[in-house]
Image 1 (tube, rainbow, N blue to C red):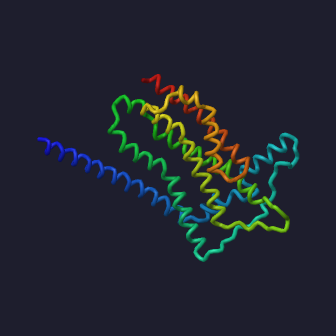
Image 2: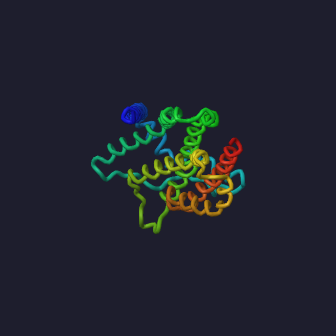
Image 3: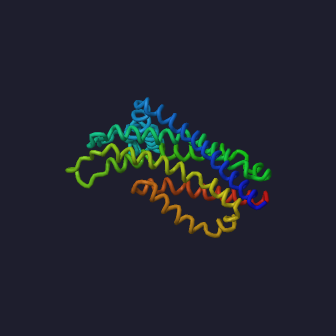
Length: 268
């Protein structure tokens, strides 16, 4: 009898692995599809999106210029030029950069579907009450990730590019930025912000597991501020403006996470 039960458990485990495999295959197929689309349209991927942050007419720079004129600062905050050039020093540099950038774009575009596939795998293991309280998790997770990516793209990345690209220790040194360095900065900032914006979702699941409580989050709020500042310093380029820009929404998300944890506790 015990042998039969073991065989059933083993079969069930193998069946779960098979189901997981197909979820991963479909997720990978979605990433591949969007990767191919991004690869086929380099003018949009690079000229319109990635390299837009080095164009003085970028939306963020226009906003700062408008704000400067509105506050009667003249053109103090206006950015009229980007005195640096992008260069490639490797034979296969542009091709490999094209592939990596396309994969990153494919992952960002496919993220909602990837999380939906993960949720489809996890959902059958939940109780009915847990499914009820988890409604909309795919939508909110995708929304937070998208907000994080857009925040990184429109707020952190352009200011980092403008500050670091124009920074000079001497007029004798000309900035010629390596292509891979520039793209790595932009894509890393966008992806990192997309991931850290998922903090409320992480807190929600930790609360469900009983590992986090709203009282704990309130008690260690000051400690969290230090940790979030360190996290912001890790995921942003080394300039104070980017650090502040990322730390502020992270603290806001931390406060939202406390509300999320408290709501879950009330539901119980």
